[in-house]
Picture 1 (cartoon, rainbow, N blue to C red):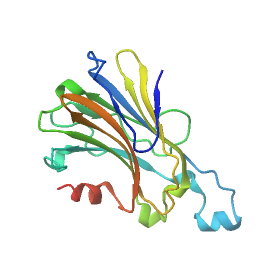
Picture 2: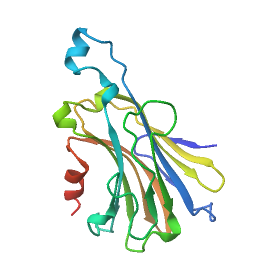
Picture 3: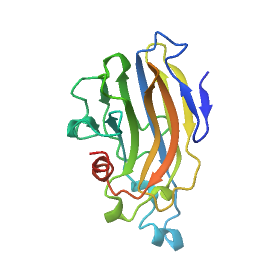
Picture 4: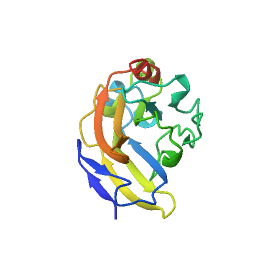
Length: 201
């Protein structure tokens, strides 16, 4: 049974689970259903159903720096150079149950100089479309053991993220030779994954 985390909590992934190698990180969200017309229709420019969220992964060194441009895994660069991180593809709507986007990770293949995998969800063309994460609900991140299909960790993002255009739901990092997961749950006003990546360049 999955362990449900609160914001700021951390958990060991590999300690006590020595055989864990391949994991799937699922990220999900739903558009807030707005009534057509009226105050909300005007505010949100036609409702929240057209909000296109994109999940990305930053592969960082021990100083929280990107190794290179290819260390950003997103819809335009689906697989890391080392092959340890693979994005399964873009979801344009967020409609439906379950994961909206998934990232497959082989922990045994993550290069030794990569100390942290930071998961980011941002809204595509947020500024141009005047969209923000107040228009998204039910956001979550979860970690699944790919071999047994067992959900290990689940974190629901429950804060108010109005006016935020990017979310950092969680991160997986090395600690004492093991891998841990941290429920981050922070929002930023970065307009794109490029802006977030540049802060780690």
